[in-house]
Image (tube, rainbow, N blue to C red; front, side):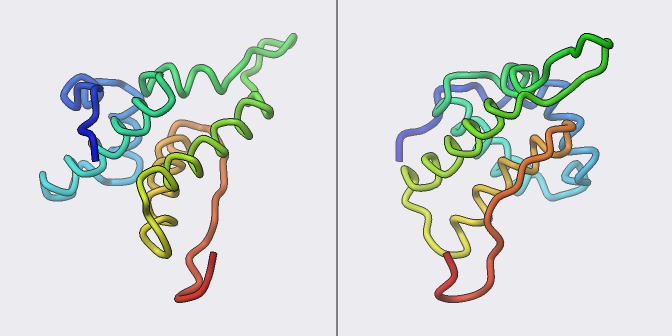
Length: 125
């Protein structure tokens, strides 16, 4: 696998990554686990060509009333990109679900409701 081009230290400083880690309590995980999550996010950001902040802000829009709303078509496109990313990595079974849902978790903890597959044991897809 090609190492990510996105600087892991740079994305670790992103307010969106801080929010994700604090909200999911990943900031309490051992350093190695935090690095794995950062590396996975960096790899996905390389896959789509956006920073974590660009990913989150690109999924949001301001309504006529001044409220924030999710761009539904963009969310669908990102969900598809996550599936393509998981496939490109060669993850299968539980690993594929965990990889995809880790990326989705980043978005959920930043206010973007997005759902993926659920692991139901061997033979689930």
